[in-house]
Length: 439
Image (tube, helix red, strand yellow):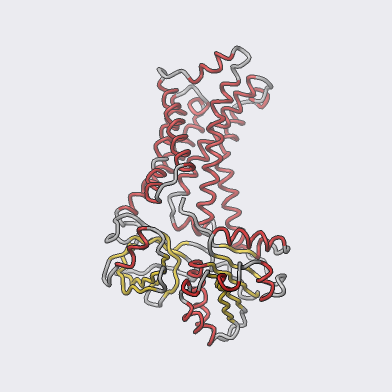
């Protein structure tokens, strides 16, 4: 059965693309076609203008998408998709902004190489100075982000500085004798766009830092799920989160650990009173310190985000594959079946870990398996049975043609399984992954 909701993220992306290239339409209406695409220097001039216009727009929307508002999550059917688009727009803007001065310099090559190079030497001109500063700061921040390994919080702080080159670049476009300055519609477009993007992003940073965007919770209990995984139960202080669904995740900060620092955690359980449970693998300093949390400690919770559980089609045989801590979204999804034990939905959950010591939440899953006949749990210990691969999956599920697959776990495992399933001619629409990256 066709579901119109599946079209919403595609329609949203199409609308976003139209907004990004809208300056091209404005420019085309203001200048005759034969004037802006004449071969030679004029063509390079046009390409330089278009690279600058579209690059600046892509940069603005990239920053706006990083504002991480819940309505964006719903519009694009999941925050991971929003941030993936954010990263792609960042790459596109990076390339276009590099080519912007190169194309403008190329138009002067017929005169001389010195004339072409001189475009980079107008440091005494205010408009050019803003352009140089925006370009250099932007390049520095992007290259630092890509090539310098650093802790997440330092990377996030560096990422927040992206608003600076965007504002400076906007000033450059308004000051220099360009189409933005000479075409009122373009000037208004960029003033509104840049202002909206910067304010939205800074508002998000400010609201998160001071706990205004998140809701107050208190720690109800803390326990070790295994040697490396800590389980934390959070109760709402006043108002619970609204519209929380199985398979979603939240951003949580504990001021007692570090004020303003937040991390994403999948929700493993949702109670009727708004109490939620999260599980965290102790990988970094922050998650290691979570085991020191005590009952009554304050927590700030932002969300919920994600649509991993929303994509479940209960009329189709579901194959869930969890690798390590990737079991967390499946815990809440499995617990949701307790409310409807007579459902005919068939679910096969494969829980893959290196050793039995890595298992977490298995007792809850075994309880669900005992009361829900169509739910089957298979724990796979790779130290004992070898690497889990597509052939091993075939030994449990003989027919892939009528299955929907849901995968969450280490990046390597997800990439392998997605590629292997596609080789087995499983349609892309039947493969769902929970792959979340912070930046």
